[in-house]
Length: 205
Image 1 (cartoon, rainbow, N blue to C red):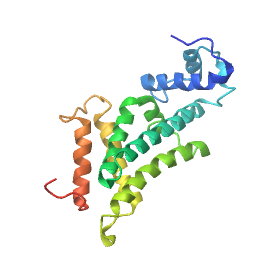
Image 2: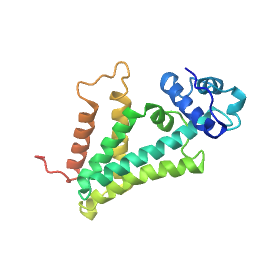
Image 3: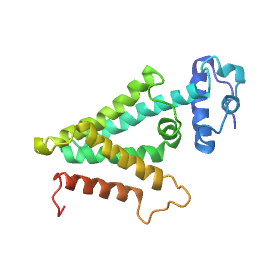
C-alpha cells in the first residue's frame, strides 16, 4: 500500500525507498517517476522537487547502497583482523551477503547502467567500497614475493569480478542458471583456487 503523510523533510527518502521496491519488482528501467510517486503516496509533481528524473532517483539509491556496502565490508575486514587471509576472504563473503539482503540497492549500484561518476557523492561512496577491498588485497599481497605480486587493484578486481559473477549467475534465482552448489560454496572455493595459484594457501588447505 502507498505510504501516506510524509513530511517534506523525509519525502526524499520515501521516494528512494519506493524506487527500491519498484527496482526489485520491475527492474531499474521498468518503472516511471510517477509510479515511484504513487508508491510513496505523493503527487508526481512532488518528485521533481527532489529529483530531476528517474536516473537521479536511482543514482541516490545507488549512493546509499554503496555506503551500506562499504560499511558491511569494513565490518567484515575489521572482524577478522589481524589475519590478512581471513579478512580478505570475509570481504568476498560480504559482497554476496549484501547482494542477497539488499537486492534493490545492488541492482541500482551494478545493473542500472548509472555511472558511478554521475555525481561526486556517488563516486566517493563507490570509491570507498572499492578501497576497502583493495586494502584487504594489499594486506594479503604482502605475503607474496615482490616479483610475483600482482598490483592490489588487480588482485581485488579479480575477486570483485568473481563475486559479481557468482551473484549474477547463481544467487539471483535467474531461470536456467541453477547451480548444484550453494553460491557461498562456489565463491569460497573459487577464491581458494585463486589464492592457491598465488601461493597464499598451501595445496592441502
